Image (cartoon, rainbow, N blue to C red; front, top):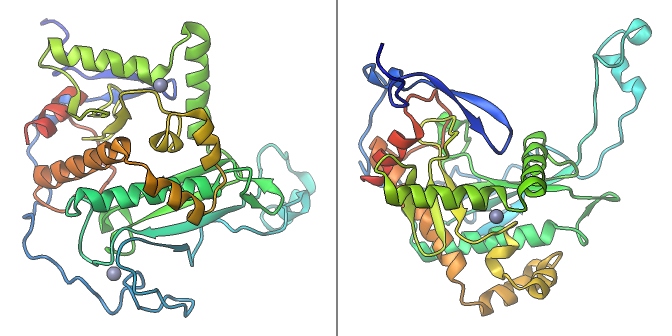
Length: 345
Ligand SMILES: [Zn+2]
Ligand SMILES: [Zn+2]
């Protein structure tokens, strides 16, 4: 029998962020592709859709009218996944769901979750995507993320009387991802609880730091960067002065990528400043105060982050010949093969 080959033979890889193993099946990449393909830039769509609740000047479901915005627009989600205010649940709430007269409470558990949900429209143009936007327009989106993060961070931000524990800023793009509206937009969920996945990752960071006195991802990135200099079979897709786009060694989705800063950063605040005093000024600020602060900063970190987002989303569109949905699918390539395909575009 021939020798084991990572590009040929199924194997497991450790996700160091969650300390869990994932299965890689490179042999499956050889099967024929029968899925849909489509052409990029067929026809640019309309810049305004009178039926879109995110387009400027249109009314949303609650009757509120969007302003005639010309850049980004942020509002509280009309259909929030979690609510800011609601009663705490108690043991008797289970009565509705199961007969609690003879039940092991460990088997049926409920915890109420509160939070705030916001929507960020990236552009007034209904049909653009991040890949179509100019870098300075993406920088405006990144600055909005920083502002939202600051605005929702303790000590200022509270839901009822509990502090927000975790702020998730994300985007689901494309109907394939279950996104309900093609207008370019992202979401923010600020929750009183830290999600299980993030708690696990924090735990792994702490474990690594305790054992080796180093940052887990900074150490990982250093190895990835040096590997890319010595072998063709590496996982770096793109880099600029401050950021690296790579397919993580443990990627679970095909063409899954991470954007990592070359210097240690622990939150979005670090894009504004690496100066500790300035960072503490930023936390808990209102939009207006932080806007002033952000506009005064010539910021290469924000610029390089926006540049990484633009390059990566453009590569996805080119690779699949369509406006690529950020989607989940079965993994068929090794991370090294996926990085190579994205790099070569
Ligand atoms: Zn729209
Ligand atoms: Zn680090």
